[in-house]
Image 1 (cartoon, rainbow, N blue to C red):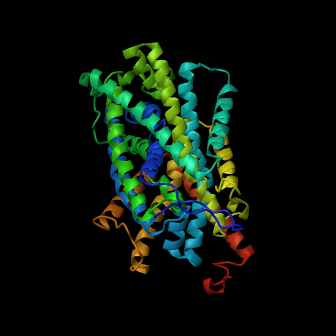
Image 2 (tube, rainbow, N blue to C red):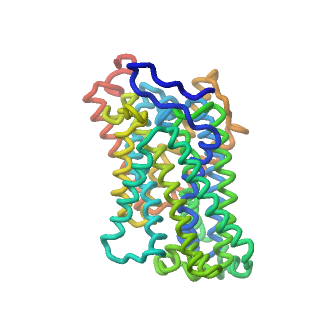
Image 3 (spheres, rainbow, N blue to C red):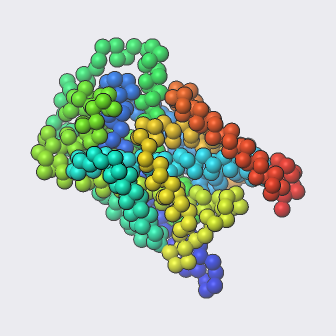
Length: 466
């Protein structure tokens, strides 16, 4: 499919299809890698008190790979900006329950999306602390604010330029990852890496609770494999590009994460940064410490700059994809009309970009562990479980729908993903569970008030809606 032609004279600005397979995969992988493995490995190992916590990444893979098949089928069948908003609306019925599910998704996204972007800002500030130790309480919010504003500025341009910039940032990410992995291969010590504490694999309550916490962090590290789905209207050949980019990103990043983790714990004894909250002098920038011990402080400083570059690529990819969600909902009439405005020259949803980016800056003032727990738990019920139900409903209601990609071995992968998401939810911290259920309850009440005021379903029959 050719690129979207310029708009005819006098026509309203529209989005352009400029993302091919390479750019789409780069977007997903930049989102997924980011600062995640460089920052969360100490948190991951702290969940179970040793290298057995790597099982959390294995559980996360067992959840996200089949879930990626769900995203791939929905993204290939319903390629539109907004991704999940479209999938939930169509899967549950555009004029009935689908309107509720789509509203709840946007409602919770208003919190979870900026939280995910904010986690990157927090990671950037942590690693910046290796180069520039800043202890004044006002400097951290200043750093994250400047980074947030800079990311918005980078995205405030046409999508063709953004696609090229995405690939450039992705190359920096791959160089950073390669540096860690090669260092690990050359200096790996299995006695250091597999120094398990006593009773590490005893299957008691503590083991399963710790595994759930480690799996949440593992899922957080993999989040982003679906980022291209939110930009369906800007993807060339979405029926093949979206599923291929999703699955390539998942498999590639899964291998990268295992190698990075082994590289770190095979050189730095895990007891030096576990528990992470008690040993921030190593935990906050563990990869920089690794490079310092092998190559010296000058190389470590240069490598830290690469990590900061990688983090910028991640938050860039996140904000790019997530800024399209309120835009799509507003265009559909399910959100405030202000958000459907497209920049007259740049042809991108500029109001949505600025608002989502601004809220992310505010969210970056919270602790990283709280941010991760909240954003993952918030998404489980409506987004991940909701989409699994949606793909089954669409198979039943619209068997003749064009499906360029179909879930392999359907319905087994979707059922595996469902079991995994339920496990993560019930093993989450109770505060995160209450936050997830509480936001759903409040969102449901607001939906009822809004639909009563606007005379929509469920107050007015679906057939009677204008």
